[in-house]
Image 1 (cartoon, rainbow, N blue to C red):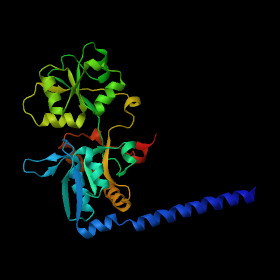
Image 2 (image 1 turned 90 degrees about the vertical axis):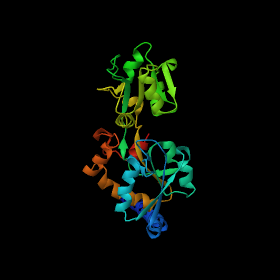
Image 3 (image 1 turned 30 degrees about the vertical axis):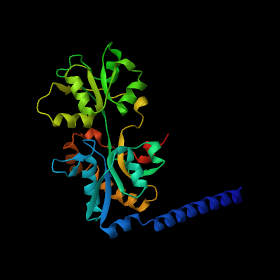
Image 4 (image 1 turned 180 degrees about the vertical axis):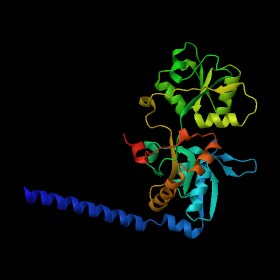
Length: 290
């Protein structure tokens, strides 16, 4: 029995050494970080979706993801960023094709995307929110409450996480008002064509920050949907090519010291995020685990 135990131990150690050697070999073959440092420029793809990424009036790229990326790139010692606008639906295609090096667009971590690309560790975790008419006349403080109230109509952006959540809750289809974008959803709430707009908390707070006069408000307090429904939805991250191990690893090392810092919190608040949107200690591997 002792000999069997020693033999098993030796086999385990050999496999561990082999795995370590393979990993080292892969990292040595991967020149993604050194290539970018030598070039002095990193190409970052973004798509317009405030507050995650958008343009200032002067054309400068800004938003939660680009601004965090700027801080990380500076700490990596890369002198210049080349920003490239790409339609959201084409970002991963452009990354795989080598037209960009990183995606900074508030992209959510999902198993489907992870089959094609690498994510950084999470940078935020968005919470749900509800926009209602001024004074909250129906006293709505959760999606479930709206579902139970007969005739309550909730606006959602077509194809959004919120639409998916409400459908999972068996929200009556005829009481969902599908809208093309958040601004349109805001309007239908203000004019009374919908009783609420279901959207992420940062998006609603950002929208409210942009207007002086409001006929709508964010429902406070708001009870978050059951974790049974949401699972691990809503965690965002930066995105890299599958083969770019050294770039992703170095990025994560720098990001770890920045996310949750006082500088990071100040930046988040300027885009409508709160401390409640920090990702906490969860890792990307945990977000992706079944």
